[in-house]
Length: 223
Image (cartoon, rainbow, N blue to C red):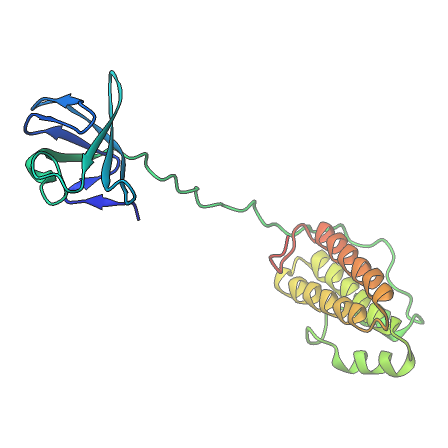
């Protein structure tokens, strides 16, 4: 908060009520006005400093704290009338309206997944069942005994996202997107060294960015 002395406020218009001469010999007459731009107190010199901006230029006034007459602490109201606030209005940034979030609906696949393909791929292409395929996740983790299984599960959900996109089911496509991203996060978290962690984190971020481009936007709100 800016300094105040009696009724004086920085960035307010002031009008002189009574003639006076400051400590440096500057005279002001009743009726003169300007905008108070500076207000301070010099404790070492025991002085009040007032800066008034007028059309003719800036005027720096000095008043001893121990003054017995004229403008002084406790008596500024007798010499200055304070008017309107002329400070520059604070600019509040306009509320950002994000770009339209619209899911991309890709064309139908020309060829369906062969019936003899792996179960997880068939599940990925299906729009049946719950959003999270927990039984399939467990089956894949039992079949693949290394950290790559998390990436494979992530890809399963990415495929499932695409299936829901083709079906025009945005809520379920979003759910699949989030599950894919979560599993890629798990994949990165299973790194066993700092170098591997950095590499897998990069792979995770690239996967997410590519998935968001396919989807049309990042439904988790991180883009």
